[in-house]
Length: 100
Image 1: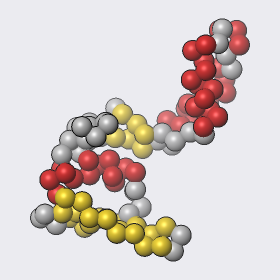
Image 2: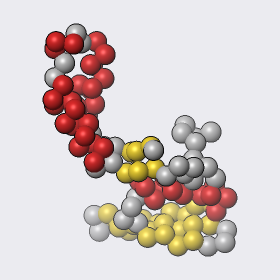
Image 3: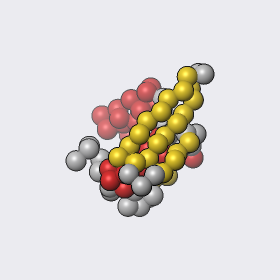
């Protein structure tokens, strides 16, 4: 299973610095607890996810209307309405990290 997690930059930097620390200096408890919290609050990515699955995972509170040729996404943030339209072929393609 893949998971999208959101953790504070400072925690991410601490985790990345673990590689260069000696074992006696690693703050295990804090890093492990923050990793657990990140996983608990993460967004699961389904196996064989499509681009549409990824958009829905990133914008879970948006409203989606699927048509034959495209998919319309509507969202409201800070009293501002946003509308995006995605080509249906792209929406249904398998998700590839890095935009290949």
